[in-house]
Image (cartoon, rainbow, N blue to C red; front, side, top):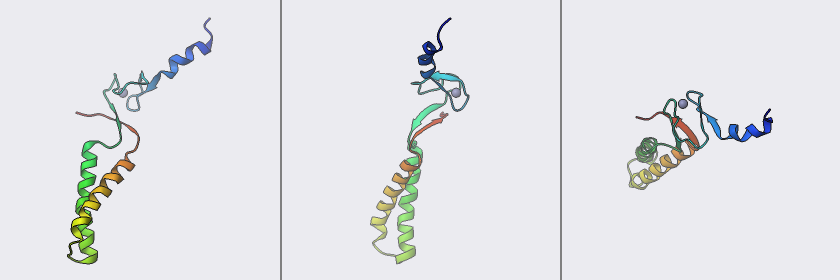
Length: 100
Ligand SMILES: [Zn+2]
């Protein structure tokens, strides 16, 4: 009879797919069963959308608060950067997504 301790490394190298709950290798980037992919951080599209929203929201708020002024120009850049960073923070970590 094999002692239980012998089996532990085998279990540790496996991870369950969060989408289909099948076993995968711990290092797997793509689930072999259902095809979801591991993503770290925001996707390129999410980062782009967040940046564009910030880019538009910056001058919009500036005009709303200050009226039409040249502040709208630097604030659109600030807004874009802010949107990009908020997106990075919001999607910080591993996510499993099906692409294509
Ligand atoms: Zn899966």
